[in-house]
Length: 275
Image (tube, rainbow, N blue to C red):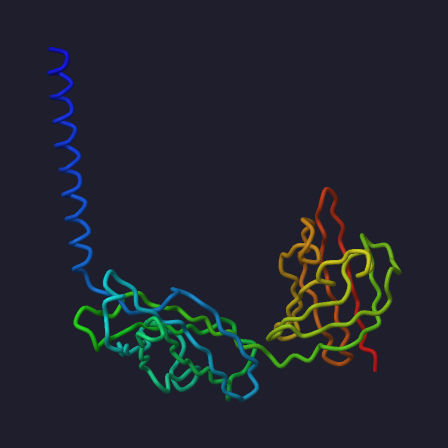
């Protein structure tokens, strides 16, 4: 009787197991019959350029994903347009000179959509950055490929011309007290309106190691210090808490930030250009 009980349990378990296999196979088959989708890799991004009258090109990543991409043979052409919800004006802020992207099998169905950022007649600073909302309209070339409904929001930051790179005499106070660990610094440009100093806090660069100095931004004469790790190496946090500025006449830069660890200190750095 006990043997019969075990045999019945074995048969029941096998039946359930086989039923699960059938269900799983059905799900895979259904998935294989679905459409492949062409669209943007991201849903949001930011582009930036100095408003100097020039045009700047940026590229948005496009890709094809889906259950049967590996079985496709033909190129896929995807057409894009700006959605009506865009606050950026075509022709004034941007252009789509070529609104189509050809995704090729030999490139693993990856491509780039070119967006031209226009800066002519743009007066900075702009109170609210314009945004382009891009959307894929059509996808042709394969029967089982459709355009994704996912849109990409592109924030357009227009920066004022900024020329802060150079050598400076510097005075620094820590919590209101003068310090003389260094009296000159170098400032290098690392991006649009983005700079990095050669020194930070109350140490010398040689003492700290890591990536010397700290990063700050110049947006139309307003100086800000983003949150960052000390020389990209230590857990100490370097961060601005009051905006600094650039004197339009003298070129003197005032940078205000703090360093936080188990302690906290505030630093005011006055940088005077060396002729």
